[in-house]
Structure formats: structure tokens, C-alpha cells
Length: 338
Image (cartoon, rainbow, N blue to C red; front, side):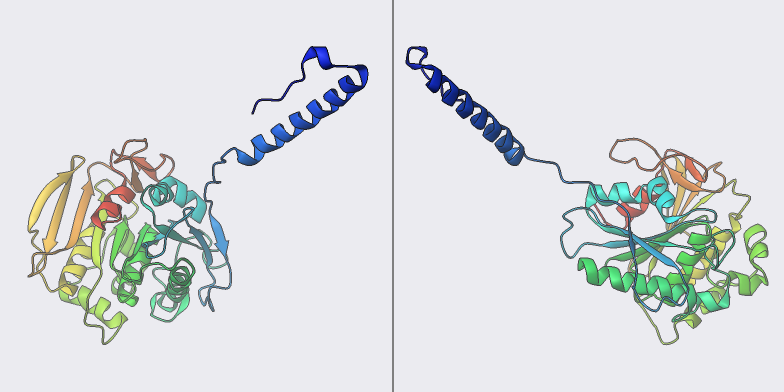
């Protein structure tokens, strides 16, 4: 804006004082207009705690991440942290909130309480927490219902994933609530009902449980009697050098969920993802219903690939392992979230 001026030949002392006052007023107006008319960048979304999402029988805490301006009808991803972790750390380290901003979906991040488990592990091995309508499983299902209602999300595009104990709870949600989830991604996790089959959680983690594919599948079918499908599609990512949750659990997950989907345990396709072997198992229609990615040489943790390139996400740190493959990105692409 250009300020008006008076010709010097017309300025008298009185007129000079008036001109000075007018100039000061105009300067103030211009300054105010510059503030009001300059576009401002919207604040970035942040993690939000949600209370009153239901009866919460598992006594969990609900957090969520909703990108600014998220339209209705978008997918919802439930992301479950591992032991000793929390919702905010897993949200940032895994890359899920980064991808939510990039591709436009919301993320539900349940958080364990130390009163429930001293190591902040989800209780994937406790009968009272893994049954439909009970305990932690019911609390997470209530969070999903609340999120769908609040953001007008697409109930046909709800996904669940988690690391370690969060991976074990992912299997729980897929089995107990197959009607809620289109697919699941288990990272360094365990099959549903493993502790019951092995007698203890530690046997599952360090040795694995000896079950036939049908016995594994029966545990899933018993979690929601009467449900005949469709069943969630499963992706498993597991380090070949994981000595906390042994890779045999990936084999057990394949046996469990191929049986649930009515197919055999022989892979129908084999290739690599970022240099890591992938096996795909397909049903009679040719649809991939189970896939595994064996992270060569990786220990116990969430695969990440820090950076700003299109295929990268996550932040390296304890239990977030840089192996040139971001699990969140791989799962999101597999689920057609972009």
C-alpha cells in the first residue's frame, strides 16, 4: 500500500502536525492490514488423547492422530506399540503419523498402562484380554468405533498393526474382531492363542508352540464363533536374527492364517522387498491372503528406513531398526492407502 503525501509548498505548522498524525494513523492501519491479510500456515496436527470412548474394560488409554483437513470416508489404522514403549514414541518412530499426513488417513494409538502390565506390554497372552467383548481387546474395538464416528471414517478400510506384544495383540484383534478389520500387519509378533497352546508366553517367544495348521486355525475360528468370513488379510514382517520373539512365530502365523483362509502352506509367489525375501500365499481366487517378509539379519524391532524419499519413513532408535525398509510404508502400500 502506498501512503498519500502532501506537497511541501502547502505545509504550514498546523497542517504539518495534522499530516504527521495522519501519517502515523495510516502506518498503523497498514501494519494491521498486513497482519490480517497475510496468509498463515495451519498448525500441524498433533497426537490427541481421547477419553470417554466406551466402557474400556481393559483400562487402556486412547490416543489418535488426525491430519488437518482430513475428509470423510478415509481409512483408519490402529497402531499398537511394543513393550516398554508408548503411543507417542511408536507413532513417531514407526512412521505411521508421517504417512498419515502424506496420504490422508487417521491413526488410532492405544497405550498400555503400567497398572495392567509392569513392562507396558499389551496382554496378548491373558485369556481375559484376548476374547471378543472382554478386556483389552474390547477396549481397542471401542476405540475403533469412536474413531470411525468422530472422523466419519470408512468402516470397510480399518487396519491394525503392531510390534512385538503389539504384534501379538494385532493377531488378537484380527481373530476376535474379524468383522472390524480388512487386514493386519504383524511385526515380530505371535499367532493368536499361542500362550494357551504352549502353556506360557515365554515358550511362545523363545521356542514356539507345536500345533498343526488346523489347530492354529481352530483357535482363530473359536475366537468369534459363527463368523465365516471374510477374514482379514495378513502381512508378517520378522527379523531372521530375532532372539526375543523367534522367527518360528512367523511360520506359525503363516500356518494359522493360511488355514483360516482355506489355502495351503506353500507360497504361490516369491520375490524380494528392498533385498529381503517375501513369500505370498494366495487363495483359490488368486488373491494374496498372507504374505511374509523375512528381514535378513535383523534383530527384534520395527523395520524403518529414515529419510524423505517417497518410499522412506520412520526414525531409527531402540527397537526401530534401519534396514532400508519401512514396515509402515510397506503395509500402507499393500493396503492401498496411498
